[in-house]
Each structure stands twice: as structure tokens, then as C-alpha cells.
Amino acid sequence: MALPMPSPSVSLVSVRGESKWMESDRHPSSQGCSKSSCKSKKNGQQTSRQKRKEDQRAAAAAVEQTVRKAKNLPNFLYLATRSRRFKGTPSSKKSLNLHQDASQEEKPRMFVVYECPGSVLTNKNPELSTQVFNLTKSNMQQLYDEVKFMEHGWRDESKRRELTHQDSRLLVVLTDEKDEESKREGQSLSSAEDSTPEVKAGVDESDFLKGVSPRRLAGFLHFRFEVEEGQAVVYIYELQVEAQYQRMSIGKRLMLLVELAARNFTRQNSDLVKLSKLMCTCIRKNTEAARFYRNLCGFQTDESDPSNFVNERLENELLEKLQRTGNQKSGNAAAKLLECLQDEEEGKFECEYEILKKDL
Image (cartoon, rainbow, N blue to C red; front, side, top):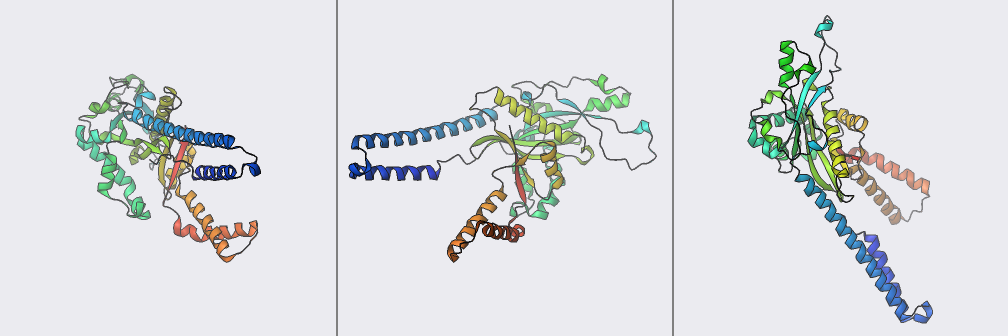
């Protein structure tokens, strides 16, 4: 949300510049500047400032246009793939049964993915919408409460509102019914091709989820199109997978689909209408999720991460402290003092979450 604002330093320099030329108007001989030339330069500065403001307004308008255009797409998934069926990799977890023979080894599972607005799913399939919430609660409640996420921990109503918000979009992954039928009938996965509809442009897929059993839910990804620090982004709110389907590359598949769709969206539009990056908020204590985003998906710390502002605050506090005491410490001594301050405050002020990004 926050739109870019004119840099304070720019206006300050301009004011100082105006003051200088006004001074030269009173003493043209000493400054070597005629009134006409000074007036011309002053007008040039005003034109330059006006141009910067117009460019900023144009950039902000382009970002808003990007988000509106993305929100108006009935189907974002179409930009990434035409096929909604995909094969999950066998779980890497070792079986507890040491006497299990090769014929009983875990086989690849087939899944299907549909896109649906969170607010629509509650009407089309209330039971499936409830299961989406229950999966999130099962995976995240304990972690939220342990770190007092957002100062209060887990709250049912808050999470329900988030998942069913008018801007929320869900990529819902279901177990493939035809896959189950083929296994019962002894068919191979390749011969189990069914009438699962292709992903098509401009098609609202929510009707496909009517009557789907909530027991088929394998996982989901919740994302939105938003403005962050003056850029249009795809913000990942949730990525949840049922325990029995974890480590089958479902999460990686969903992240890849969103990234491909975002890149193709930008490719199909002008340079001004573009989705600049993927973003997500990750609880620091959830080290496995952090490794997933960083190592498998290529994310890194975003400029808006709270840790950046903590360091900036500590630097300002150090500067004020040195100024108050009149202490003229050398650069190395000041750096050591800053490091001590950071060590002291790390435990007290470390935010429970981090903000990650992947530039597109």
C-alpha cells in the first residue's frame, strides 16, 4: 500500500537553491548573475520539480492500473499453464515398516489445481472453504501462539476474514479422483487421462469446485495483488499442505505456477504495467518454511523487512548519544558501540516475522 512520495531531500535542495537565487537577485554584481538569467534558472528549477511530480504521479497511476488489471482477470492460473493435473513426487519420508516389499512402495500421486476467489468459495462450497480454514489452523495455530504473532497470536475470526477477503485468491489442490479409480482398476497413471477441464482464459473456475468433497483437499496457496512500497506485487498470504501430502512438491509447484503467471502477465503488457515481485511474510521460528522460500524458491530479505528499520533506529540512537555527550569517537569505536547496541537490543526487539521477496 503506501505510494511513493517526493523525496524530502529533493524539496530541501530546491528550497536552498531558490534561496540562493533570491539572494543573487539582491546582489547581482557580487553573484555575477543578471535578474533575467536568475529568473530563467528559477523557472527551470520549478519546471524540473513539476516534471518529477508528474513522473511520480504517472508511476503511481501505472502501479494502481497494474493491480486493477490483475484483479480483473477471472483466471490468473491460465497465464502459467493449460493443464491443471500434475504428478506429485513420492514422499521422501522413510516408511516405518522395515518389512515392506517393493510392490508396496509409495507410488506417485496425481493432483488437480483450481483457482477460486476466497470470498466465492464460501458460497460455492462452504464445506471445502471450512476445510481450507481448518488446514491453516491445524498447521499454524501453535506457531502463532508461541511467537504471539502480530502481538496476539492465533485468532479464528481474523484468519477467516483474511481467507475470505474480497481480494483473496486461492489455488486449491485436490487429490485426483481418476487417479484413485485407476489404482483400484490396476491401470497406469498415463492411461487415467480423464475429462478434467483444461485451464482456459477468462473462465471463472469456481463452479468446478461445487460439490467437491473437502476430504480431497491436499493443499492451497492464498495470494493477492497489492501495492507495496510503490510497486505492484503478488503477495503470498498462505501456503498450506496437508501432512500426508507434504514433501510431494505441491508447495513448490504452486509457487512456480504463481511466478510463471506473474512473469507472463508482465510480458503481455507494457513496461509500466508489470508485477515487480513476489512477496511473503514468514515467521522466523518457522525455519523449515524459511529454508523452502529461500533455498527452493529463490527468495531473499525484502527492503521493507522490520530488521532494516531496527538497524536504522539503532544508528540514529547512536548518533544522538554521541552528539549529546560530545564524544568524538573514531569510526571504529563508533562501529563497535553500534555493534554492542545491536547485540543488546537483538533479543528485545527482534520481530517475530520476516518479509521476503523474489524480484521478477
